[in-house]
Image 1 (cartoon, rainbow, N blue to C red):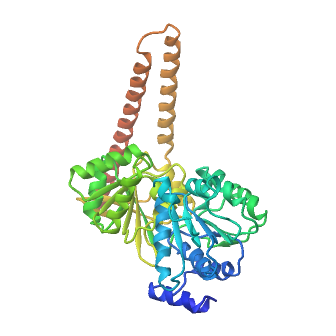
Image 2: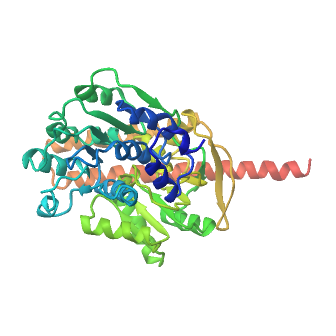
Length: 453
């Protein structure tokens, strides 16, 4: 079905055609007609399914261009996502020449944000703190003609505590249409939204967490060093554009430093970067200047980075929702993508949880810098559980001894305790490796024996 089937204006249809958008995605088909009618909606859909058009099309088509006043506010949790939405919206000005769109984001000089607001834009796109500052504290723009408020990546807005900023201006807008977009819908999000729109929010739901164009893979690294495994992966896949995710900034920094030392074309994107550095990284991505982006989960949400062919998780996040967001950076807009995750026999718990959630993985191992088929993950063996219990008992014993000695205030006891615990963990890891090697040896002997039966 083409966009002609949706009740949009000829100008909007011409703009979409010129930009190369011919057929609406499933979620666009479900939500745009409702949004055009002014209905408030909460939309859940997989990343990469075209949610940005879901709100830009109805907002722009419903703007009264003869009325030079603020009519729509689009809120995004990060400056990168706000910039991305703005870049997505600007091409519509070719068919809507009087349309004025303004970007207000954190990280830019406050005075720059205030410039040019003497004449109100029709649409403002921005981050919560900067919008609160400009719209509430400065009262730079009248809100009485605002018809639509968009909350993009709403679950992230909630988790990061941004709703207090949103409250400052949203509660001043009466009877606005709310368009809420989130990859996951949680009960506490609906409760918070009820402050603006009441308790019964219509939901447009696409019940998939990742695109069907994304293939999921688990790589058993055995006991290869993490950085070595990353390099083996790059050699085996030769990615066009690879996103490497790490749950901790320290891990991301370590992987990035290693790849730089090996002369790979790579950049780093974490929350530690300032606004100028983050803008430089995004520019490098858009200009195809790099092959590998190493990042924390700040890049897992909403960012539409073109042509990501592979995603590699060096570890899995504590909140497994972020696995789906990471995987959603590839396989976007009908392209095929691959999401790989490194694991070993000490880190099978989270992959097994994803399997229980319905993620269908295939299993791979490294062989001579190539990826070949491996064996499925086995459920935790009783012996492994016993060993983990033994380690926990050993650590409790060390801590109890340390507490007893602490009463006598012996110098350096904290350092000695940490060293003792580290020693116990290393011993535990060595024993796991020995058992795994013995298991593999036994399996190999069995296979050899079967050849002569």
